[in-house]
Image 1 (tube, rainbow, N blue to C red):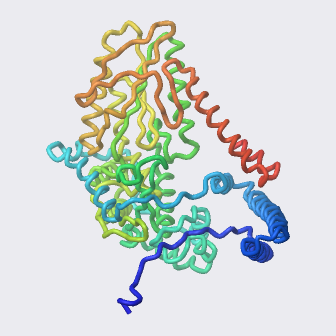
Image 2: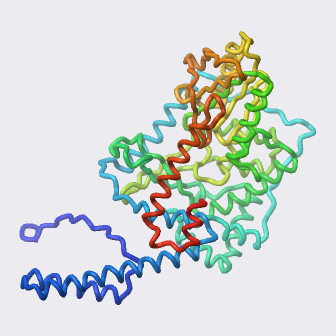
Image 3: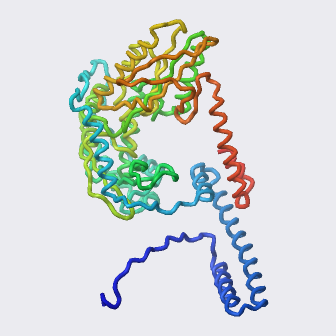
Length: 508
């Protein structure tokens, strides 16, 4: 058999099914294909006319069915901007075919592991933890995480985004549907974890899927891929329960950094940008020059030192079983990379907070809680959003010591980062000098980690292009260019949109 009929590999065609095709349209398509074969065989004019008639009718019927399908789908999603965006994206940008690449899942796992190890090795000869934190006697405490009622678990389960991870035994959307039947068991697992201070090992596993950052990038270069981490749906529910309790504790006791806009209720990138812009405008009104420095960190979430983070949590009053829960949560995490249907061997994570998790961003903001004191000690203002830190220093235009003071502040920040095993990236750190009106722009020489930072005319800050005159003309230009492109795209899909859907798309 191997000699006469050897095995061969055939590439499977991934043709997506058109959901608007009905049984009637499929029958019409078969008639059209039959008419095409008949004309190619006979070459008669009558068969050609018959084929063209069927082709014209089939095209009109398909267009009508597709229009009705998307109109109904858009109307049912009119109140959900996320679903609307996904529908428009599927219409305008169909999924690209898999990138041709010889990379394997093990290649990605090795690359991500070695990248973090290289960064952590730069801290081996330096202090690995800062001065120990001591809890003040007046600081409140969180000794025990509270158990939750079934109704709260059900509400959280239904409110979570049903992103299915390969580790989930059933699709997340299905779990949400049948959650009332499984509610007693889910509640028991969650409350058992909260009471014991132990996180189940199954909840500490993640699947990483590499995604090409931009379609135009070289798919054979492993550094052009962004790792997307997926966690099990049940672990997301548990983390959201803990995140809610931790956030309430921090809010009630005023332990949040007031200059941190990430992961706080009623705060966003908009509040961060407004706070920074307001300070720069106020300084300019007072005839002061200002420096805006946008710090950049390399793989910040992945290099968080667990001992330092747990020490920080203890200094904020988290102790007892609650502290033990976070210690268990950080210990023993692992991940596997999934690529082209294959999965790498598990890799253990000894540093960092889990990316793609609910708690990870909040824990990172607490990890950097003491950075604000270092910045404020130099007379600088600051505002943070997650790992994006913005420094503001205003001074009289005639101040000859401004450059030295800025360099001294950055040196202390660099030392703090090193002590907390966070790596500053001088090449990606941006500097804007906003001159005090009507003083001319100053050329300051700023050093950071033995590198010189040169001022630039514009800098991208949390998605907004800022310029050294605070005119936002560059940002307006970019937005109008993007809007023009979006309007062109809307015109392409206008036949499938109702008037209400078109208006909703234009307002997004």
